[in-house]
Image (spheres, rainbow, N blue to C red):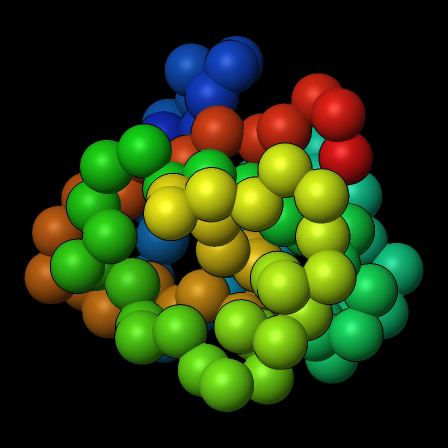
Length: 99
């Protein structure tokens, strides 16, 4: 199990390897905007990975293309619906208030 910490609430949850950040956060009751049901087409689940980037799957071409259309994207940006937990290290994410 991997520990996922969600900021700014500082909520920590145990998540299984292979779960997407979106699925793990929604299962725990953590609020996260999303409207495309994990299809990487809306960009609403954009968040920042503060720690543990190596604990997530590599960014895909499709995810990168969506991120290119979003204002406020940085080097720590990921789409929660596309980032899968690999179980190699704990992960800390920040839910963005301006999304």
